[in-house]
Image 1: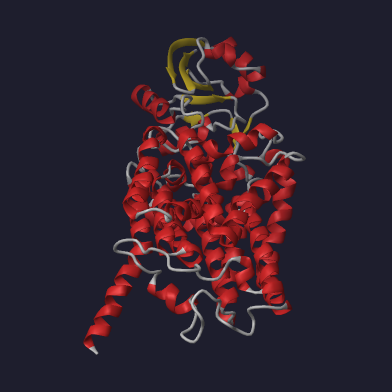
Image 2 (image 1 turned 120 degrees about the horizontal axis):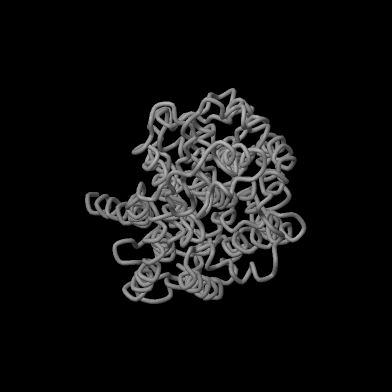
Length: 529
C-alpha cells in the first residue's frame, strides 16, 4: 500500500505546481516596485472615496461613480486596517492578479491539459498588463480574478451539476457585477456554452477533457488534485468523455444557469440604473469607438505593442490547435470586445482597461499553442514575452499615467509647498473641476499639513462628489491672505495668466508672482500680495 500512497502524494504535489507556480510568479512580479509610482488620478479618486465615512460613501455613489461604489466600500474597510500608502492601496490588486493567474492555469488544465494551463498562467504572470493593473488601486484586477473564477465554476457545474457548484457560480457572478459592470459581458460566452451543452452535451461545447494524451510538463504532469477529483470524469467513464450526469444536457441546464444569474440581476440592476444616469458626467472624456480602436486594442490592452502582437499570434495558433475546446476561452475574449465596441459606437463606453478581464482567456489560448512543443522551447517563448515587455514594465513602475511620457508629479508639487510654506498661507487650484484632481493629489501627499484651501465653500465630502465647490466672490474670500500657492494643470510659463474667470481676475488684481516651479503635468507658483 505504501508505493501507491507515495505515488498519489507525488502526483498531488505535481498537480499543485500547475497553478501554484503561476500564482507565486505573478505575486512576485506584481509586488516588485509596487509602491514606486505615485498614485495617479484614478487612484486618488479611490483614496478620496475609500477614506470617507460609509454614509458619505453611499452619498457619493448617488452622485458619481456608482459603478465603482462596491469596490470603494471594500477599500474603505481595507484602508481602515492597512492604511493608505501606495503599497497598501494596491496590495488587493496584486493579490487578485496572482489569484487570476493561478485560476487561469487551473482553467487551462481543465480545458486544454496541464501543460497548456501551466504555460497560460506563466504567460499571464509576465505580461506588462498584469503588473499595470496588479499595481493599481482600482477594481480591474479583482474583476479579472472573478471573471476567471466564474468561468472555472461554470465548467465544473456543467460537468457535474450540483446545487453547491451553481451557488458558487451565482455568488461569483454577483460579485463580478458589483465590482465591474462591463466584465459581465463575459456572460455572453457563458450563455453560448450553456446553450450548446443543453442542446448537445459538454463535448459539443468543447468542455470534455483533452482528446488523446497530452504531453505533461516536466514537474507538473497533471491538473491540480482538487480539479481532477471534483471535475474530472469518474472512474467508470471512458477517457476523453464527459461524465454522464443527469443535468449535463437538456433544458434543465439552461434553467439552472438562469436561476444562478438571479442574485446578480437583483443586486446589479439598481447599480446599473444609477450608473447609467451618471454616464454623461462619469465618461465625458470618452469619445465614440472607431474601427482603428480595434486594431490598437492588443497593444493597448497588453500595455506593449510587441507583446500584444505576440499574444494575439499565439492565441490564434492555440485556437486552431484546440478546435472545439477553444470555444469557451475564445468567446470569452471576442464577445466582450465586440459587445463593448458595438455599444461604444453608439455611446461613449470604449475604454481599453475595461477589457482587462479578457486577457487571461487570451493567455489560455496562447498557452495551448505553446503546449504543442516541448517544454523548454515553450518556456523560452514565455521568457521572450517577459523580456520584450521589460521596457514597459520599467515605465509603468515610474508612472501610471497614459501616455507615460506625460506624468503628473503630485508628490513633487507637495514637496515644494511643504519646503516653502509659512503659517497663514493659502492654496488655490485651477481648474477646479479637472480630472487630474490637483487638490486631491496635494491632500494625499500633505494631509493636514497642506495650506488652507481658501476658496472652498463645500468640500468633496460635503458635496458627495469628487470635486469641491468654490465661493462665487473669490476676491472677498482672498481678503486677509498675503501668500497664495497657485497650482495649475500643465506647464505654464505664467501660471497666473492661465487662471480664467473671476478667480483669475481676483488673483491678478491682488497678487504678483514671486516664484514659479514647473513640475511634470503641473505648475506651482507662490503669489504674494
